[in-house]
Structures are given as C-alpha cells and as structure tokens.
Length: 325
Ligand code: AHG
Ligand code: MN
Ligand code: MN
Image 1 (cartoon, rainbow, N blue to C red):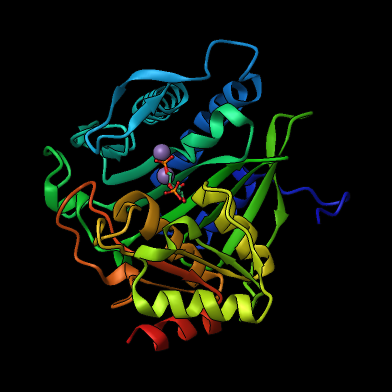
Image 2 (cartoon, rainbow, N blue to C red):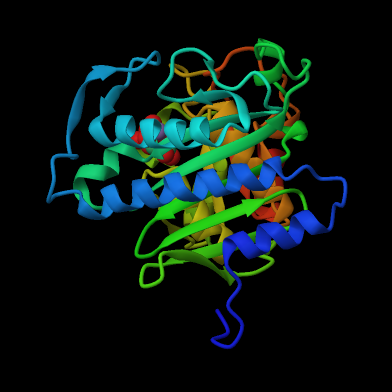
C-alpha cells in the first residue's frame, strides 16, 4: 500500500524509468502522458454512467459482428484523440476500428488497444477496463505505417498495460522491467504508485472460465475444470478480462478462454487483449499460452485475429498444458 510519506506519481515514475535509458527520446513517456489523459476522460464518463446518456447500445456492430455500446465508441474516440493530439503514434489498432488508423507518419510507435473491455458489464455497473500494447514501427519514420508495423509478435512489445475501472481506477503497466500498479487518487486527479513490483503467486486457488461453454471445451480443459472442482477451488468469472486478470494477478489463479468447436480460435483477440496481458503476466512471473505455444510467439496475420488463451500462475498453466498435450 502507498506510504503516505512518499507519494510517487505515474508521471514521476515514468520519468525516472526514462532516466535509466540516457539514449531514450522521451516519446514513449509522452505516450504514457496521453494514455493517462485519455484514461481520466474515460474514467469521468464511466463514473457518470447512469446519470448521463452513455449506457446502452450505440446502434452499430463492429467488424467482428459484435454489438457496439455507446461507451465503446466514447472510449475509442477519447484514446484516439488524445494520442493523435500528442503526436507520438504513427498508427493505432483498435477493437473498434475496422482497419489501421493512421496518425503521425513522423512518429515511431504503434499502439494497439481494446478501449473498453467487458462491454457487457457496462450497463450493470460491474468492473470494466482498457487494454493497450505499444510497439516500435519497423518501417522508416516519415512514411505511412504498414501492416508489418502493426502485426508484430508479442515478444516485440515495448510496453503494455491495462486500466481497471473498478472499486477504484488503477493503471497497471510493464515496459519489460517488472509490473507496477498506480491508483487514481480522485482528490488530486493523479495516479499514484500503489502496487510496486507486482508478482503473481506460482500457485492459486481461483479458476476463471466461462463454464457455460463446458460442453464445447477441448478434452484437456474439461479434465482441468473437473480437477478444479474436485479440489474445491473457487470459480470466479465476471466476464471482463481485465477484471478477471487483475484479481488473479493479485491473488494467484488461472484465466482461460479456450477453443471450442464453433470458435476454434477462442474469442479473445491477439493484438489488443492476449498479447498485452501475456506480456504483463510473464513480467509478473506467470505464464500465457494458446495451449500449443507461448502467446507472445504467435505470428499475427490479421488485426482482429483471435487465439485461445490459458494464462495465470505458472504451476496452474503447466497443469492445463500437461492435460492438453
Ligand atoms: P470486449 O468487451 O472488449 O468485447 O471483451 C469481452 C471479452 C472479455 O473481456 C471477456 O473475458 C470475454 O469477452 C467474456 O466472454 P463471454 O461472455 O463469452 O464469457
Ligand atoms: Mn475486450
Ligand atoms: Mn472492447
């Protein structure tokens, strides 16, 4: 918990991290500034949901055929306008954008995001989130960003994180040197370091999976879920990946969205859901797999590509993998 004598804000923390790399240009830190600003806008809208007209359907579907909620669109617009104004991204991939959104060709970073994760929870006041992932472009600065810039393997991520709009609002991120969590102190309007150097327990007692799909699970996953019940483990699944992930990161546990007969690649998207969470969980000492390979080594072929996901405490993920292979 935060020591009252030494408050470190997100901006101070990012600046201190930047100072460890004397050759750093400061552009990544500026992206964090823009993410922070967009997060405050989304947080404001989430906290007023129910009072102003942000609940419910937007009236459209996205390229994946899912119904879009008003807050999905609002959050997407807020992140894009903040990152666009900052000028440090050459392109954005978003769940709510059918194609690559081109921004400043002179910038060197690409950002992938799920602007509002857990849309089905918006109208019922359950936790929701935002997920982001940052890559360095591979094409020359000064040109239009390419597919190759946007479809990089997760191992190339420069940074990744999420924001959870829960009982408090938190931003958790990694740049490959551990995982740190910051809580928004509404009284001062700033994120303060509250969860330094987050580590996930190797073992946990929580399993998170939509058991309504049990009958369609692969045999190994069924076996694992049966074993969880046998061992009287706790089933916890809210249906917002960010919230399920955040709880399991802190307490230890496993989160799965496996393949099924009707969805052979599962449901969750590689570029803006699975890769960033895989980077975070590995940095916290956990593990993330598709069942066949490490999530961050999957070669992306499409912006909105889906992959099966098994992620969490190392021993639990290994147990699933042993049953599946
Ligand atoms: P999104 O709201 O960004 O489309 O993501 C919803 C995802 C994820 O947050 C969650 O883990 C999963 O969908 C829940 O799916 P089911 O309702 O099929 O369990
Ligand atoms: Mn999502
Ligand atoms: Mn979403």
